[in-house]
Image (cartoon, rainbow, N blue to C red; front, side, top):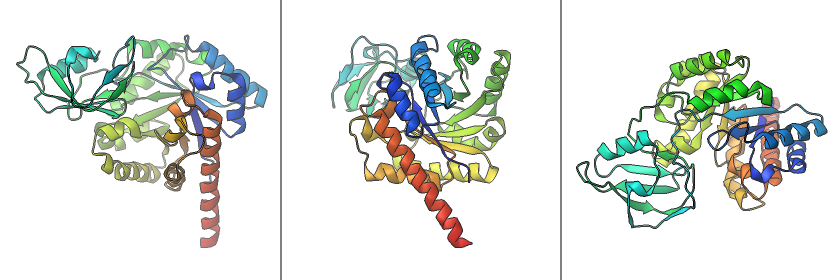
Length: 338
């Protein structure tokens, strides 16, 4: 049985080389850099620390870059915006991306807007003819810069790759990148466009990982499989595109199709979310990891838990030990069947 890989995410919480060394010793096989928040050049110190930690541990771990792609995020804000349940705010109060703003101005009342992986929920209350579009806060909280935004049911026109994505691909090899993650894949054409751009940028040999995080990706999954090295079940935004209680069945469906096609797949998002704050995970989180391995995942990844969380080393320890326990269970079950 192929070993399940363990991935973390680079960020301020694991910027120290010693922290990265401990994460590698706990079993981390690779790390992700989210280019929606930075660039390779801006993160050069982080990347150097990662490569130095790997050399000290005598390993050659992977470095994955997560492109911007057609993902929608709010713009930069000077200070967090506090949104209170029940209040009404103007569309102008939040720096929505221009392509989404244009759609929101025309859509009918009742349209939902999800922010920060669905933690915050707004609803449009004014008609398209109103002079100023108004939004009611259904589920409030603190909104920070560059958080994700989704408008379920709306079609937002966008290209597969941004100009910054193309620039990052040209620099990828010089920073030791081993794989490229394409967000919000909508069909095979997105992956073909990325692969062509990778070839032109001189990094065509790198692994290509297709992130399924909307219903277009789920529906077009069969046509994605031939054009990528690994499918990523990105449950954050994927959960925004459906009722949340429907997400587990969709995850199982994607996993089954990947197994049948012999295509590797990764499970990601909120695997150990409570460890952003706490040194010990919940029982449900450990079970989630265990079941992802039993479903055939080739890799699992944490995001904010290591990038900005309080316990990055403990996070990797629990992730690794939970995965290894699931692998041992599978091996024992296989022996008992024989």
